[in-house]
Length: 388
Image (cartoon, rainbow, N blue to C red; front, side, top):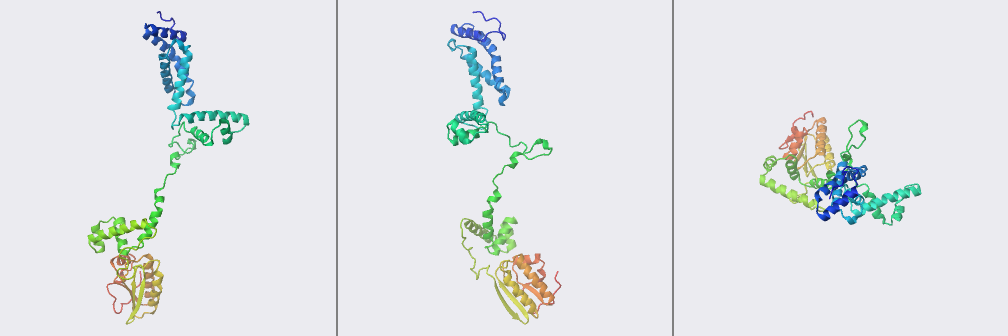
């Protein structure tokens, strides 16, 4: 069978397709007829691909999809299919539409939603023309005969075809300044904010611990000290430090899980609760002796302050404040002791701080009251020195 003359663009594509179909039936010159049909059909595939180029996809990708569709059309040539050009155009356009439907969406959208989205777009255009305004949701539901939730899903799908980058500038590039990216403006869960309740709860529980346990916690978790170093700083054994840490952490965990934490183990075993302030005043040959028991902080320092002022004003020989049973003093307590020292100096009376523990003595030295610390109260304190 002779090949159709004029294999250029002027060759009738339908005639070449009929000759290829006949060659497949007879088994003669099949490869040559197929190659000729493919060469003549290729420009048609590229032309159909260009008709879809306005949709934002690269033309090379569209041309590849169209040519694959044309391969299917060539392989499906049959005498009973009628015009090859019509069959090939339908096949290639179907492949291109399927490509846009299945491969071009940045977010996967079910096919039913895609079809409803297209119908919604057409309905919006028609109703806008008829009403001279944008249609409402209810008007669209009535025109499309769909529920409101399906319409909302279709409207959202219109935004899912092409995602915008989070790295794009938040402001216009014409501003001339380096602007933030859109991703920087999107909020995220604040982990520190989520911990506020736990932090406040733990803070309240720590204030209920004895001074020694608070010091051990501070040295371990804020000072990053080892148990051996903590034992040397507090004057207890390393094994004891380990037991106290374990007991303290277990009590804090239990307190986080309950609305009302149980009293810390051991509080009050050796007398009154350390956080209950007790003050006793005695007079020894003109020396006012103030014995204090319990922690002194901003919550109870006003209970001690009047006693200090009274003794500094009325003592003849001196004032001795016994701190051996005071496990902890805060800034407010040190301020009250410093005020009492200055008042005693102005009245010509010496004030001494007797037998403070290791923790309290360290705080007094840091505050500048180390010169007033004594291991025992003298019968008559020496003359006062000018306060620094």
